Image 1 (cartoon, rainbow, N blue to C red):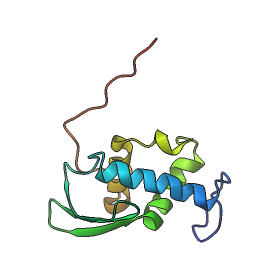
Image 2 (spheres, helix red, strand yellow; image 1 turned 90 degrees about the vertical axis):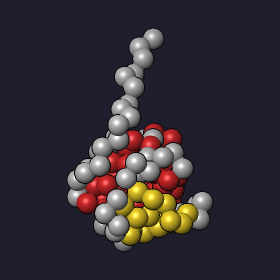
Image 3 (spheres, rainbow, N blue to C red; image 1 turned 30 degrees about the horizontal axis):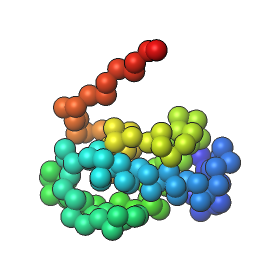
Length: 117
């Protein structure tokens, strides 16, 4: 695992790039409705910080720094290559795993199967 105080992940992704992925993840989680099936958005600066409350009434702060740490695993195993690879479903899974250790809230909306051309 990468040292999160360092400048790069094990894969060599520069810290600035990790922050780009984290900002995209936060946008997808908040604006892309990734977490809205289980969380109320109490505040959102539109850039890098949101305060949310889950269905149980617990409040959390999501920001670029704590999401960057959660993203390193996905970057190191090459599941994400570009910030636009982060969609609302993945954002939801990463946020829940970061906050709760597992995905505990499932959306009724399921990912559509990939179309083959």
